[in-house]
Length: 184
Image (cartoon, rainbow, N blue to C red):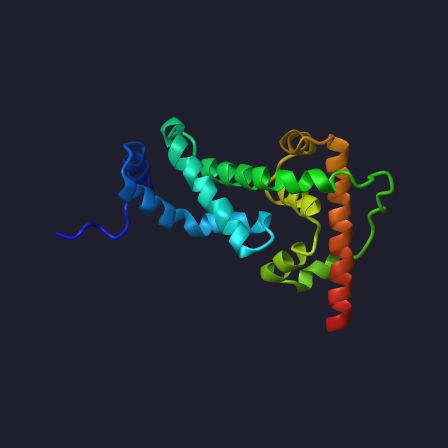
């Protein structure tokens, strides 16, 4: 008799908790696309994202014994992936954080220009942001962390998080304006 094609998520997790390498591989394959989607948002390229995903799954398998089934597994996995990506970026961010924040540009622009873009266009535009701005934009706008939480994660003042978010939005507006003018 052949094993079923789709194994319940709960069974995957239970078997991973017991240390089954086969089920760890199945869990990895089951959540790979989801994990890569998150990894790509925080990474400069696909190879970097793959490293984040692989590092995150190592952390998942090392700590799966502490996972409690009352909490959705995807949310737990997402937190690990985001934190892994942040850990990898922290070294790069230290260098970029030395930039002066006092002269942040005021926020302005045409927010409606984004209506003409699809998801892939937006993700490509985001890759043009400096790493610190991309990271804070992702954490705040996409993953829903507040500035105080971001400040703790990145070891920066929350006011710096606000300024970098403002700069990221302004830069995206400028890029979008340029894109829509060249295509319009």
